[in-house]
Image (cartoon, rainbow, N blue to C red; front, side, top):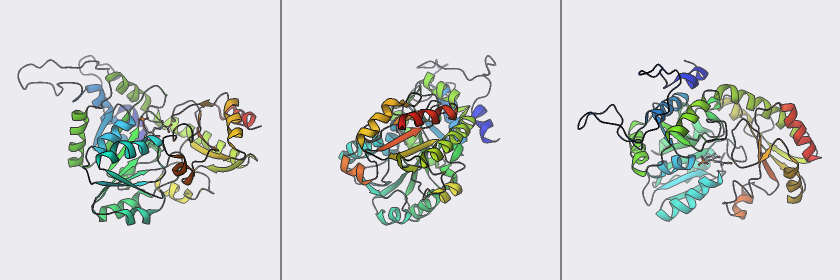
Length: 378
Ligand code: P1T
């Protein structure tokens, strides 16, 4: 079955007891057992819940994976991956990352003896050169948040596997509609399902997918043992949201392309970051490794922070807000919002300047979006 069909049907047979076409919300913490050691596959909802299981099967199908695990947030999914590491282990990560991922590495993992080494995100040779006998994972966000840099997943995977290192890809920005990292050689792909997968800005969630059975068993153990699972209702909302992923992503992209082109010609804009622009340094890689360019556009404004403050105050349709990937358009100032947990000097050195704005381009009529930005920049 093709992607859009699987997004609607995978893991969701009609309910055998009632025929309900839409998968039910199994809002239960426990399951009555018919005898000692006799159950219908579920014992306690931290260990497993049918609604969550349907979501896990659906997301695994969309990422071309055999196994999927759902979590209460994207960071809970990331923490589960970190749980497989031990003191002394090392991660090599691209240097443009969501601020919360950086905080998890620096303020949770590092004090436990797990070190992260950062390399320029698009430099394949730098990942390979940073690998030591302590390296367990290469960790790549692609496209990156907020600068939309791409990591060549196939090339990084080849270099990593030559040293027995596994590759973790944060696929939140692209969504599986536009990019499937496991098909390119990654070992684990994860999402903040809060974003495009749910798509309606009403759930916090996460998921990870893999084809590596021993790794899946270890991750599933931590999902239950550490317990960062989503509730049945949130699982159901994500299952409902993901049904429209294909149509949403096509419209996000159409609107994003129009906005990126508009901003590229605007006199108050210094630089536009969008991998679908032929001027983007990763445009050729994007065409090779992705099936589209996505709905996120970042841009650097001329003038200083005061000009940025005025623009964000004047936006009407774009809400000034963290997060992304919902049907409504959002504008974020990474330096003071999503990436504020990165020390200013580190942030500036990576290009996340005070004049950078990040747009999550929604699926409203693009004429209204362009009009909103036009009046705000005037
Ligand atoms: O917020 P949570 O569901 O825990 O997911 C964390 C996360 C992980 N990876 C990426 C690429 C992300 O963008 C995020 C969350 N990001 C935002 C809230 C944001 O506005 O960038």
